[in-house]
Image 1 (cartoon, helix red, strand yellow):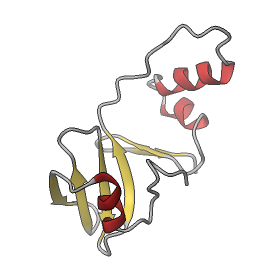
Image 2 (cartoon, helix red, strand yellow; image 1 turned 45 degrees about the vertical axis):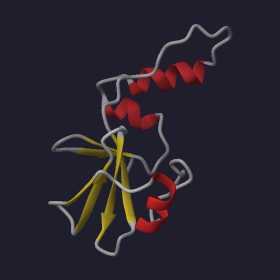
Image 3 (cartoon, rainbow, N blue to C red; image 1 turned 180 degrees about the horizontal axis):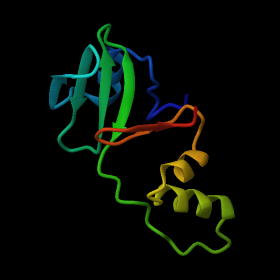
Image 4 (cartoon, one colour; image 1 turned 180 degrees about the vertical axis):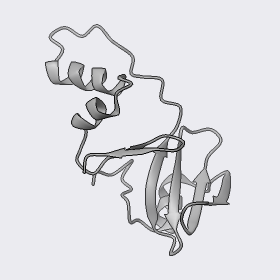
Length: 112
């Protein structure tokens, strides 16, 4: 698993707070025993299990990447951007690391 700003799944709540500061709000999670922590001025939140270990990092409000006109742009980068902007979750998942999961309000997609 790749780190998010030097924090990886499994980190303790104290480690996350040390790196990102105290959250604006914390609330219980409905589907698992744990908590969700959010920051008002950021587009991400963290979910912790009942032992206060990081279970997931949620990115919120993705608007897509800017499309700079780069000379000699790599085909793989173009394919990755296309996949991220696609409404087809299978196309997106094909371009991501095998342990990535994409979730919506009521569905989850993974490369399993």
